[in-house]
Length: 564
Image (cartoon, rainbow, N blue to C red):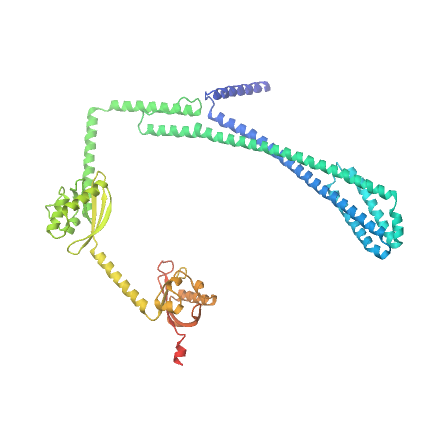
């Protein structure tokens, strides 16, 4: 059974390799599933290699950091120990050369301190000991201890007995031999740590190679992913879109359209051939239906369609006519030669047109009648030429004209499909009259506000920024309105004055209006401390753009002095 399974797997693999060879030669015989699975398998292999190389890179990097750190720390430790040995020797010479105990005391204290530092340096260096220097460091540590004990005995003899006893203790071959061995140990340790640094550098080189391998594998993975996208787009997504479009065309009755991707040997090719079979079946159904239709049925159908079309045409015509005649504005439609296609009753009313002017009349006839009735005083020929020019250029425009009887007409002109022109005209006389009255009232109110003795200040309730001040308010504040408008109280006054103003704003927001005068003392940054009397109201409500605080201010600073 196992042999049969092995033989089946070998046969499948051989078949896939043959397909792959044909695919490379240009004969696309791989199925979509085989393409996607192949790319996924290669991507999985590359990802596995990438994972293995990543683990190896992390391991190399950790080893490199450890070697580099221990070699550097050990080199620093060797240098410090060497310096401390030299310092101890120098303190020992001071003891040798001292004539009495008092002069020797400072050298003895320094030697004891250096001995402690030397012992601590050797102990801290134990952290960097590895397999390569463990044996040598063990003997080196023993010699250092002998060196420290020897110097301790030197201090004891010099301080406890005499400088001569110290010199006698230090002048011997054992001391010199110990120094020589310590120097040899230090040199040997330095060589070991140099070798350790070289090994760290070699590991760093290996890590660079590993990084290059990782980059290459990542690039291969990226290429495989891009290849997968390309294969999916070209072999699946694009092909399915083409076949979907072909199916839509067939569903709409286009049975002669070509079905793409028929020569493919994969699933897309089988789907394309199935769609082609569907197209052929639909074409045969259409042929049978055409054969079954008789001449009488075709004539009856044509007459029915004609009647339906006429009914729809008449309904649309009446609907259009009703819509045009019920417009509140006047409307006229012209063709490309400025002849009337349609006009409504309001257009006739605006220009008092007689019933003789109907559809088919020219724009020139309308203008001639307006000249006769006194509603047009321009050059008819030039006006018609200008309209024809706008029709030709298809330029929409809007403008106003003033009739001789005082009415003002607003005109909107737009091009129509087919080269025609439509003009909508509205009598805006009453609207313009109201606008002029409103403008006069606004100027009148502005004049009053600007010239009253009280200061009037308006503030946007949403952000508490000043939006208006009159001349009296400018004088009271001591700033121009250009310096005030758009700013808040905190930008114009002191902190104390600004907090008072904001507190009054919150009170106004709570009670809607403050018609009773409120007297406050304000620190004015320009005019100094001022006594003001204010009445305040709200305009509009919360959330509205017109929500404002209006304050009427009177400066009463000078009033007590005047009364006195």
